[in-house]
Every structure is written in C-alpha cells, then in structure tokens.
Image (cartoon, rainbow over all chains, first blue to last red; front, side):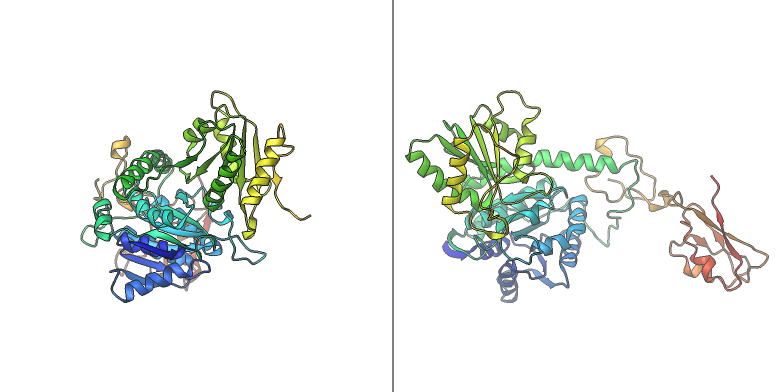
Length: 385
Length: 99
C-alpha cells in the first residue's frame, strides 16, 4: 500500500515488516521517531517484539547483541553521538558474527553541537566489520531494512542502514509499504546455526589466542566478499518480487558520459536532477551512486570509471588530515587496476547539514569540467572564509 | 562443531566455526603467561583461613581440605596480588617472576 511517510517511519515499517523480535534503543534526535513508532507498534500489538528501554546506546547495542546471540531477529537505531557511544559494541556484534540490522540517521558529530546531517558519524565506524548501506530516499530506507536482514542472516555480519538527518528522517515521501505476507515469502524467520541455549551451553566470544584470532578475521573478510554477491542476488530477487531492484551501486546516465559524478545518499538523488539539466544542455555527464560502502564495490567502481575523462566525487564527510572519505576510497580502488585512470576531483560539501542543492552540485560539476586537473586534494565547496 | 571439554585443535577452514564460540573448554586457555609477580605462600605461617581462596578473582587458588594450606594454580594465576593483600597474617609474598 502506498503511504506518505517520514524516513524515520520508513525504518519503523521496515522493522515491522521484517518481524523483528527485539528492539533495544535509546532516543536521540533525529532517530527518535523511529523508536517512538516501534514502541507504539509493540504496545498496540501490531508488532510482537520485546521493546527494551536502555540507559545508553552502549547498552542498546549490548542488549541487541544478547538477543541476537540467543537467536532473535534483533533491531536498534541510533545517530551520531549515540553511534559513537556504542562503538565498542559495534566491534563486538561484527566479531561475534551476529546478523543485527541497525538504522543510523546520519547526523554530524559535535562539537559544535549539531543535529543536522553529514556522514562522519557512520564513516567513523567504517572499520568495525558492519556492512553499510547509504539510502537515497524513504522507499530505499524501508526496503533496505528488509534486505539488510536477508543478507546479514546469510553472511553473518551486521548491517547498518543509513539515512540522512532531516533530508530523509523528517521528510515525508510516498512509500510503497509491501504486505507483510509478501515480505514473509522473501524473508523467512531467522534460524541461526548456533545460539545461546541453556540446554546446549557454549562459550561466546571467549578468550581467543593468537593461534586462531587471525583466522576469525580472515573469515570476516571472506564474509564481506561473499556479501557483495549476496547483496546483488537478493537485490535482484527483491526487484522481481516488489518491482524495485537494488545493487551495490546505481548508474544514472553513465553509458556515454565523459564526466562521472560520484555521490551517495541524498546528495546522489538530488544530483540526478542536475545530470538531467546538464544533459539537456548537451553535456555528457552521468552519476555513479555508491549505495553500499562496506563491502566496498571496488570492481564496479573500476568498471564504471575506467577510461572516462574526469571523475568528480562529492563527500559530505572528511577524514581530517586526509581528504573526503569516498574520494579516498575511490582513488584507492584504482591504484592496482589496469587501464586508463581519469583525473579525480574531490569536493567536500554540505558538512553539518548545510544544504547540497542542485545549484551547489551544478557549480561543482562546472568547476571540474573547466579545469584540466584538481589544484589540490580537497576542493572545498562553499566555505565562507 | 564440537563443544565438549576437549582441547579443540583447528586444522583447517572446515574445523573453524564462523564465530569465536565454543572453541573448547576454557581450561585449555592457560592465562598465566602475562603474570609479572607470583604469589608464594609460606605454609609455615598459613592459618588456613582460606580468605585468599575466597578472594581470588580467577578461581586460581585450589581448596584441598580444611587442614591443608590452599594451593595456587600457576597455570591460571595472573599475579594480581589480591591474595597477598587480603591475607590476615601476611604469609603470601609477591615475588619477581623468573622465566
């Protein structure tokens, strides 16, 4: 059924349709609406789940890990400082190979105190072993929660579904909310191979000597590699059932493009309008939207960018002392590849929720098109200094 | 996957569980290797109060019987010194570890 819903409520519906069994959460703007709605859904019986109010995000993830380890389909959601507070537990969830799905509403990190969007919160959790999905609209948010469980439960790694603060979280859009019976056909109940069971006691996460620790890490990387295939397969199956197909990346008018723009999340959905406008003016431009950041779509990036004249990356994030993070990763993907490596322009824009409008994106594209190569590794867009 | 009290030796990928769970009994994980100071009980002074046995956070002091001084299990004792601190007659000395 089509509904007009906020991005946060798209998350709540995604969790409802996935029949999550436990939710442990601590409220933080702009995530609050997600867990408020889930608490209503559990209170009125619409969702048969245990809702646990916890005293911090560290506890939220700890509780979620416990319920997932005992065999429940477990869910939580957070944002920014909350994600940072649960950082230790993020490692624990991934290392214990638990298929938890969590929504993170991208909110910039304080100080200065802020509630508006950028990606530095989730990208600070880049190396914890979670898959990361950056969503471009509310529909993708809902679908990615369901897909998150489908993929996570096959590769035994957790998934972080990421949406921009306010631009999606508090913005109403038309969303097709599938029937739960149809979702049941796509997403069967979670049946873990090993779980905490008083009748079959085991140790979980116990001391692991140098003799075997490295092998567990090797297996996590193997699972990430496998996840690339599973994400594509399941995204296709989802498309067959619900009419919306998802992959690691999305190409928009790239076929004959000289200049490729790389963006993620809502900057990418906004950029499509700019690509259309520039195409109408006769410019051969296209967009590569990176949807899945972990596992990183190295092969797709090389395939799409190889031999183009220019590549423009817009980062709504920064790795202080280096560059924009997507820019750095895209460049890194190329180093050992064969073929023609186009010059890459790395722009930083929209930090702390400053709007990245079609005008901003168009100015960035025009700036890159008129230059032979970037004058520096970071090209700041709109800094008023 | 086995989860009895045996010391499981992982020979290859097929023996290896996905998650670090049930790698065999923790008894096989001898945790004393990072001890710097070692507690030594002077049995002639010991009054057999067993306060050290009660306080040991690693259960690394064994109770034999009421008439025998407790015995420190050096495979698991991490050398925290709580036993020496709590001993009412100060008959436990923390001595430099020799390797």
